[in-house]
Length: 335
Image (tube, rainbow, N blue to C red):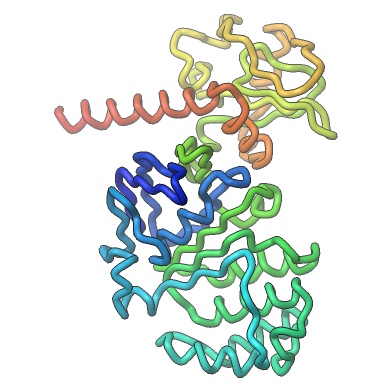
């Protein structure tokens, strides 16, 4: 497990993090999402022990990363967005460095390279940028570390290779393993991650599993902005509305006192991203919500936009639900 408490870190005189707290549990593929310059790579390097945190605490399985203890190094591998490729055959490079990892599997490496269509005997430096990235990812997977950090893994990969990466990561997962993918190209991780953390300007805006999100919000595509939408964005497919999920009792989750069965809705205006500002009626919204059933597909790009540029409405809504659930747990514990 990764535990970050009140992290403060500055780089070249610029404050990157000022009190960041974050918990990442084992057995999940995390998407660390943020715009360029949001601090994603810095956080990855801090977790990997390549940077020392200024103040606060970072622990990975109870160990401080920057202490660089052998048991920590044996179970963590970081693939940066770009790197200097050695003038060695890929298989030789892997043999030279894989020996430092107790779970390195040379046969698996060869399999991964062939799946990625990279020759094991090819000289690293002479490969194209995409092939270099694939070779390094193949090596990282063959190490079988408990924690794998991939910074912008899709950069330089063609579409078939991105699909291959998704499949290999899914096959790689075990209950005791954690994968963190950092990216600003949100669509690339949409079918890989099962947990998302969104950061912006050093602030954690969202940290949730997709299953948990699916129980709180739903996504609907149509031609109108719904009155009570938490966020709306025009896409090529139409207007995507992020809506509070309807509970069995007919109450919109988190909107106390607004019963859809009676036709009353929150008068809170939608936050709309786009040039058109058409607005649906309350009846439209009610009908649409009742027809959503168990739809759990999450539009990752719209979710990201809602967190980053949605005026805080979605983020505040989700936090209010989390606070309410925490209060219920405390009340239950007291009883």
